[in-house]
Length: 147
Image (cartoon, rainbow, N blue to C red; front, side, top):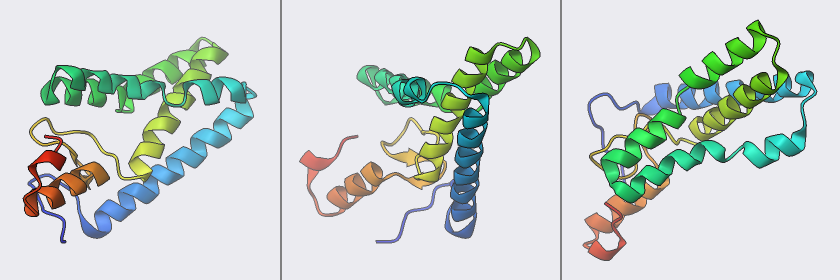
């Protein structure tokens, strides 16, 4: 099934390039984290912490998209990392790299920023869950639709 296109959604080669770019950012974050000499146990413990932003989905799609997007943009880890560099605070640098690595990993896998109007619709296209929901809707399986 061809992926539906929505205004502002990226598809085709640009989508692939954005995902490859994210993979590059992930690898750069991992290299910088290694160079920092921070604990890999801390990395393992916190790598999924940004996904706590998805708890907003308990209050609905709009709140979920806001929560997810708030924890999945590079702005906050960039500010945290810059402050960590400016004041030589290694834990802040480590947290910023873990956070940015998480975001980059998500983007490399195709999980983009969320739109509140449809489950699985992201700026990178439909996520796997969104594709399953679209397929279920096309086949008339209302029970399998998460939105």
